[in-house]
Length: 173
Image 1 (cartoon, rainbow, N blue to C red):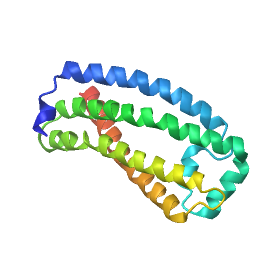
Image 2: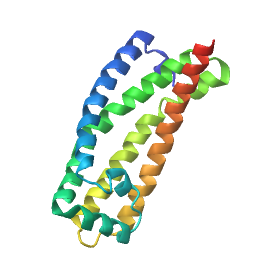
Image 3: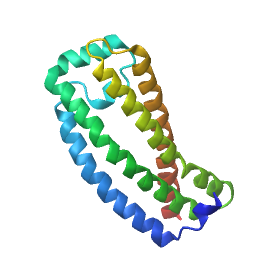
């Protein structure tokens, strides 16, 4: 954690700005792809959990939708290489504005987005393999994807809420 302390605030702001732009650009593409997956979006698929629910989604999507899901998983790779830097840099900046145990908590939470990205990669792999096993996706892969997605969102939520909370605390003054 001492290595994180050596990164200047200016560098963290540059990282946050660049990763915010890249995250936004990739998000636009991912949201557009997600439109082709209605009525079930990619997040629904991440939490399908069972072969029965996944098959309902696959049927609703048809072949074009299943290809759109694959496209979403492909675009998620550069996305998961970018968003951890956004969350982490903002969390570190928030931690620098804190003191005591809140500062220490923020420093630890700055690592959470990178762990989340690893879980995201595991989730994507499991979902891809389940898609490749159409029409009989293994429930073990769907459960692994749902668990990884849940932990990913929990870690990103903790990091994001910390940064937001500390930012609001600083604004209040």
